[in-house]
Length: 298
Image (cartoon, rainbow, N blue to C red; front, top):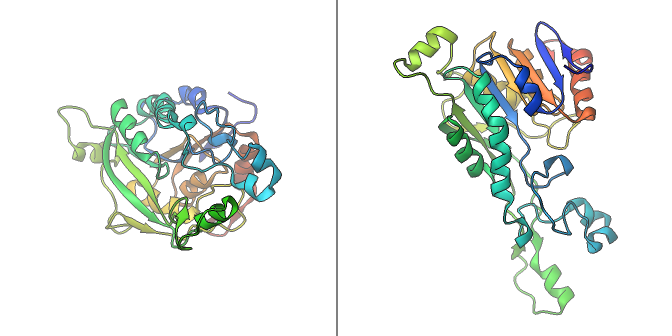
């Protein structure tokens, strides 16, 4: 236990590495897992999950150092060089290390809802199945808007003295307006059924009044953003209401600034959050303790 931990009847905020802190959670005590995990695409230092020797990592190349804008964008997020060829495999190994603990602390039919990005979601899904979880579906989160940052190839061709092409020819990615949410569940025991899981723990079903298709449209813009990848509380509330019941315990082992915990409390669930970055952990604690507003927490 850390002296920074905050534990109440409604929520527990645990400071530290989830690989260690999840060991303190009793077997089969968590109903739902909802987490926006690191995507492993080198968005920031906390998102580097591989042994990459690329000199451009996180904007560290000589050319990037000369340009503040270039440095802030870093190297291509989808890792185009040979230095990145093991990235997917190393991401998969990292996921396996904590998924084993998630399997232990959850119940039969517990839903596991993970935001894990577009580029490596296939790696996450495969290793989750290897650990023992069952894949149920992908929910597509429609953010309604997203920046288009693909660079015109002409910018490079002109600098190199090459012939120009159509201005519509770009380097990079499409606008990331949609993002996958992987929906897994822990299998029920042989000799039982999903209905048994629902009778015993109110697990295994979903609320069709919340969502009937696997397309979820919620604006991605967050007011007073306190984390680089902070997700809207409305998004997390919708997912929680879809797959759980009031009184359930929701675990987020990559809590960040605490949006999942906020959403759980706003929907009358209990919550456990784990975060190893001290700054984000303190922000999460502050949101719980000081940001209560009428009808919920921001």
